[in-house]
Length: 169
Image (tube, rainbow, N blue to C red):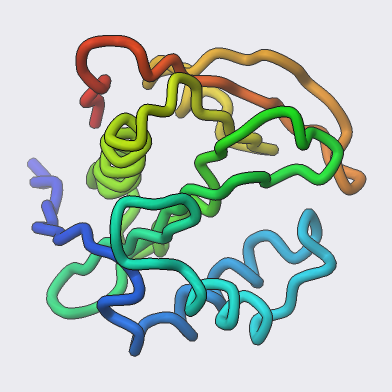
């Protein structure tokens, strides 16, 4: 029987581990350059360096496993230029292939939900071209489907007024 490898990860502000900012920026550029054509790796680095390392929006969290970056997730004011009325957003949820399937994305999302609650946010939004089922299983709801930057995406919301975050792995 194959045992599933587990990873012990630490979730922290990216800015407290600035040495990983270029790696995270490159991952994000590789993954989302088609839906964020106005951003380059360099502009992402500058953007992440501008985030504060305290409860605020925007911010970026990083998952660290064995002193290496494993994934990231951000809270931002606006993630879709054609939906400025929706705010704030969960954005840039990414886990490196090596670490997928071990709950790291859920840990990152839960940390973002926790911070948004601390900031008295009632509703958090996200958009996803490929991970709708993942988010539906974690309590998110589809509020709209549309074409964004040439790609079909689902816009989803999460009610933060519930008593506790959904802690799904």
